[in-house]
Structures are given as structure tokens and as C-alpha cells.
Amino acid sequence: MSEQKQGDVATLISRLEEEKAAAGAEIAIASEAILRFQLGRETYGIPIDQVKGISRLRPITFVPGTPAYVLGVCNQAGSVIPVISLSDLLGGSNHETSRDSRLITIHSNEVGEGDIGILVDRVQDVIAVPINAVEAPLLTLERSGNFLRGQHRQPDGKIVLLLDLPALLRLITNRAGG
Amino acid sequence: MDTDIMNFSLGGQRFGLLVRQVENIIKAHSGLLLDTGFQATMPLWLAFKQIAILDQPLPVVSLARKLGLEASLPRDGGRLLLTHSGGLHCALLVDEVYGLVHAGNQQLRILPTWLNAGGSRTVWGCYLAPDDSLTILLDPDNIFTASESAAINHLLTRQLEGATR
View (spheres, rainbow over the protein chains, first blue to last red):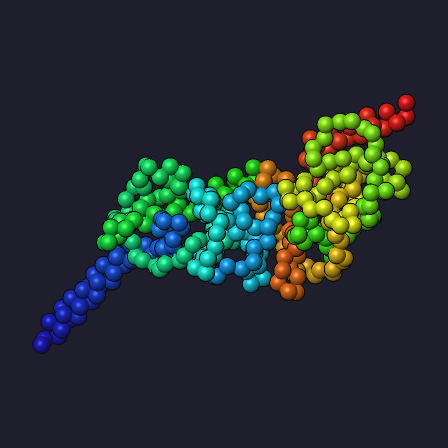
């Protein structure tokens, strides 16, 4: 093989690798890692990169003078975080917890004052949701519809409701602060 | 720097006030609280009482009721914490006083302002005890809203005027 051909092959391989890398990057950009969790009969999802931690329930200390959806505060490894009942906020009223209940700790600039724990019935898993597979939320979801940025229909037909976390947190902090 | 916290219970839950905000603690037995005879429509959490050892009537606040907690009836009548709120001298009725704790700065946490509904700052922080439990810290100065302070002040003035006639 001549030196020129060797150079051409090397260029081709290099170009192919660049294209593959670019394609890989495109795939990574085009899908989002979503943490799925259960709340009542619905499955919700939030971007995993907004999740700081998932833990079992800890004792919650009631704080007087807060809205009903604020369950209180809990000690999370020395940090005191407010705990929100997502069920209550989204229109349900189920405050019952079980062995499967989990506290998802999220951090958002919307809150500005630290982390918030949201109480969910069960954490499922993390799935990759292609961005082009996110549909507009159903208009029939009256209350929670305000906090949804879309929904994802999974291959088995089940729907994952994708929460608009910044909108939700804005509402929590504005509402509570009066 | 350590901060001294006075621990007390309300409706079965532990709360705290900074010690420097409490002037005195009085056992709230029935003989101590005298009716002022002052007729007024007052919220359930508020009463004007003449405390036998003091020379003028005070607003007595059922702190449990004011905070929306289930008001229990302490067997021994509870305790009155004499303090100031919204510029008013007042007595806060609590169930039981546990005592003082010395809290280091690393054991105190300031809670986010958005937790207080309506923008009040009745709750300002919490104390992390060595056993990992949390004590909610109250600011007595913010127990009354501005309008409540004004209304109480008005009633108090009328009460004092009535007494001097």
C-alpha cells in the first residue's frame, strides 16, 4: 500500500470516527434520562440530572403555618429540607406512605434556598426518552396539566407524564410565600 | 457561639424560642389568670387576662391554637411564657416547658422564607439535636400579624381606659 493510500485510509477512518462520535453525540442530545416514579395510578418522570438523591422516608417534623402540601421538614444527613407532598400538589390527597414510599431530593435554582424533598409512592427506574417522542400533555389533566411539559408513550402503551419541575417549584415557593 | 434555646411542647410537638426572647415563665394555674371582664369578640386563640402577679391585663395567646395545632389541655394548666410580639407585651400559653439547650451554630438551620404561608416569619429555623431530631424555632415577634397587633393594641387601650374610669 502506497503512502498516499495509507494516508487516505487513515483520513477515512478518522472521518468515520468523527462521524460516529457526532452521531453518538446527536443520540445523546436527542434523548433525555428520565427518572420514573409512581404517584397513585399515574407514572411521572423528571430529568435525572435534576435529582440530587433518592432515600427512604425519614421522620418528618411538622412546620405550622405552611400550606397543606408542605408535609414538614426532615433531616437529610445534616441538611434540613422541606418535604412536599406531590400528590397533594397535583390534586390528590393521599398522604399515606408505605414501604415503597421514597423521598426524591431535588435542587433547583427556582427555589434559591436549597433542596426540596418530594414524597412519591414508588421510584421505578431511569429510562431514555427521545426528545422527538415527547407528546403534548393531554388537556384532560386539569390540575397536574399545569405542571407538565409533555408525556411519553412507552412501547407497552403506558404513559409517563413528564413534570415541568421549574414550573412546579416556582409555584410551590410563590404559593407558600403568599 | 452558642445560642440558648428554650424547649417547650405544643400539641405533642417540640418547639423552641430563643431564651433571650422570654422574660419569664409562669405556671398557668386557674387562680393566676383573672378574667378582665372585658367583653369583646376575640379569636379563639386570644384572651385578655389579668395575671395576678402583674399590674395590668395582658393578651394571653393560646400558641397551639394560633399556630393551627390541636390544642391540648395540659393537666397542670400549662405554662405562660412572657414575651413581646409586634411591640406588645404578651403571654404565650404552652403545654409544657422542657428546659434549655445550648445550641452551637452548626446545630441551627434557617428555614426558607417561602415555607411561611402569607409571608409571615413565625417559624424561622430549626435546631438539630444530637439525636437527629428537629425542633422548630419560633419568633415570638412575628406571632401577631401587623393587623392583629393593631387590633389587640386597640382593645388593650380600651380596656385600660375602662379600668381608669
